Length: 583
Image (cartoon, rainbow, N blue to C red; front, top):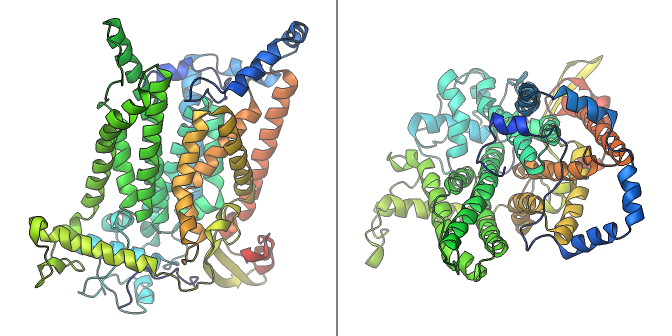
């Protein structure tokens, strides 16, 4: 049987190109520079400069360091293995694709089990089905899950259903059922598993771009591929995996924009100065396609759950700060004024209206049909706006009233649930969500099947510690990679701290899990070092990363049974509960 569903959220009733082509891949040094770059602030930090100065002040020590053995035999072998452009290109794309294949196997294998609606699938799967049929969600009879599980998806009622999440995630969930039908639970969950698999590839290529190391990219992709929380959330048709995916896609677009816009700014300033004109404020840059793309991705995030709005806000502020620092670095006299008063309005127009249009488009089924909940609210007597806003279409007035009611409902969600988790505990994974538990014959008696949204402890606990270190490192060295990743984490996590008294769950954390993985990737790059590092340091870094990776994979194998509903003895199930609050 399925574990108790969550709260029923219804009303009670590289630097030179945007891409990284094969030519660039072939020119990439074989993972010899997984280091973080200098900051966006005025050059490097003063403390870093003084440290470099102190290190070079003693000529004798510098000479001795130059004679010290560097690199390892493994580095030499690896360089030889990737000695041709074809091999480097194969590794450049083959590595991320390999971990994506691993992710696909872990997510799609036996996806149709359990063959029953699990947890909040009772809402989202059935809503997705009626959304594809009518263009809006309709109500179902009470206790209809058994009938649905038996293969009858047509028992919905004609009345519209009052749902309090936007429709895009349900459109995506319903795609598999719209094409292949509802009889096989595989198709309830297929698109959720697909976006979870693609997200692994995105994490790998993002980590590679941040660190200039395919090894680190593959490392990050592997961690995300085998993490239990990421696997569980890809095997159940809930909305949160889609929040994660669209937000991560927007993050990738922001990363692509960063290098491109810095180059355009530099070229425009150089062109103006070559004509004898000193730009006092710097130009307003409109040609930023990746910002439009990010706006679309973040708009899609919000069209799955409203928490996506925080990604729009966080990265909108991030773009303004990056532009401000870029103008300062390029010597623009009034860099702050230019960034805030000249470029920021342009960036706003590129990002926010795009997000709004995509968000609104997700409601097209509700807008262009007549049967959706409160679709004609503003058409009622005395309900339409008057005065200067009377021109606003009544469908938009009705949609806004619907949103206001849904927002009030969200604020009031505080009924207790046995698996709710305070957001303060999410990073340490104190109370993972048990979504499915079933007993079946076997195991010399009774076997248990579970689906628990439990992450790999070695990943989550290490990422929490690494995040604290990166906050310190950002303050000291101001490395832009750290600032970008921490912005993603902040957008996905920090707003939930304002809702500590609401009924919320650990599995919401999938929305920001990619940034925890990227935090580990940045720290792993620092630990691994470069082939030009002293041999002792390089050997230590390789050994530490190898041991950690093997340990993570081993723990993930151990936990796979309770995230994928494999039948195991009850005593073995208990061994997975390392903390009392897990069981």
